[in-house]
Amino acid sequence: MAATPRFRKDAVAVPETAVPEAAVPEVGVTEVGVPAAAGSAAPAPTPAAPEGKHPVDEVLPPLKMFTGGLQHVAAMYAGVVAPPMIVGPAVGLSATETAFLMGASLFTAGLATLLQTLGFWRIGARLPFVNGVSFAGVTPMIAIGKDQGENALPVIFGAIVVAGALGFLAAPYFGRLVRFFPPVVTGTVITLIGVSLLPVAFTWSQGGDSAATGHGSMKNIGMAALTLVTVLLMRTFLRGFLRQISILLGLAVGTLLAIPLGMTGFEAIGNAPLIGFPTPFHFGAPQFQAAAIVSMCVVMLVCMTESTADMLALGRIVGRPADARTVAGGLRADALGSAVSPLFNGFMCSAFAQNVGLVAMTRVRSRFVVAAGGGILILLGLCPAAASVIALVPLPVLGGAGIVLFGSVAASGIQTLTSAALEKDENALIVAAALGIGLIPIAAPGFYHAFPEDLLVVLDSGISSGCVVAIVLNLAFNHLGPRRSPAPETTPAH
Image (cartoon, rainbow, N blue to C red; front, side):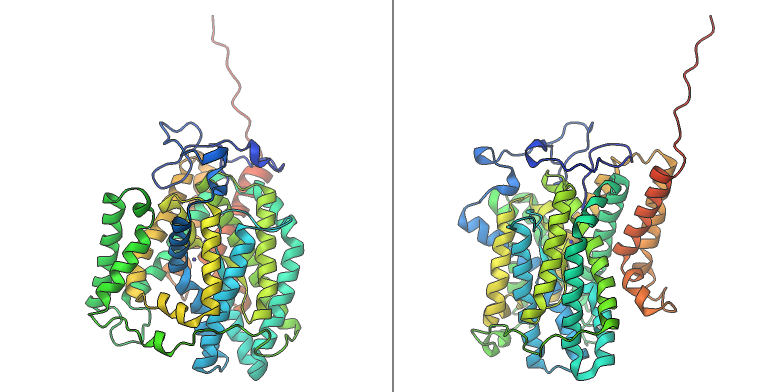
């Protein structure tokens, strides 16, 4: 919803050797929260954390931890509950069972986020990295559901368990690919992440449901615009802590204004039970079928690619570049979270890009703030009544705030590209081709309609397809292709 270590102005890959955390220098942070490239003019100084800690490891006061975590939850809530809302009815679940699936998704998203932020052993990126249900798996899961009928969810859960286990084993090898993500690749991918998420914000701004009567009405778009203006004004005029939670305040103001307009109500709170633990294997024990496993393994690879890009972007934003070990740890957390998720009736977990934008915008880089958000997600999963309070935020309000969030991600990518040596024709071509192909699913959603459904898992994701193109072209032009030696110096005639 959810990348980049770039230190140099050329497209040569960074060394594969992992850099010890203590050896990573503090770097300046620009207005959008992205560390300035080497050689850039007058970078803004990075605020020093107390006791010599990196800001990522700083523990903030309880109130700031809670409100910051709540802000992350508000930014990603709709993205977490959307996949179960789609998959549930598609596999024949009732409204009550679908609500149970949504609560399970919140619970497992919280567990996966804690794995990423706190970590243990070699598991977890230990960055302010939010995990939740991956949208990449929605289409394959619906396809599995059509084939399996009543056994749909057990077969889906079994496939996710196997895909998560294989992803866990592959994580260290995937982590070594960091050196193939120089600024020209990561800047392109970050830009695509932001641009790919913006249509989601636009859909929310219209009302979310294209079949609804008021979809795209002036009331919906006006409420989104009002929320957007509110967030911008708060970001401009507020200072300190209030400025950092401007997104949360904007969502609160927009929701309060929406109540008298009839755009939200409190019925969901009254109907929701106070306690609701996601009973393990509620829909039956996992079943293992080869076709479903292959399909979800492809989704796992897509999620690992997107998570790698998001980790690299986040590492740059917070001033702690993600090396091979960090990426491997983050991918292990993704895979382990995915493998454990079906135990509690959840789906595959991966990075949420929208929260990367929130970190870039607020410049609150503490991973413990995001861990607090993970704790809130777990409580929401255990308390449907509390989850329904977050659900009070109308989609147009969320869409107005989302425009700022997702636009911040795209701005971070553009800034990264300024250090990608685009004066080199090869690098300019990499950006042009990757952005062009990555924008196809956004600009022409039915472009690949004649392709096999298995390929659509990658092709219909602009982030995944653009990332693959950028990596392949970078390999071709800057690693495998003929190296251009500098022109020989000429001796002036005497």
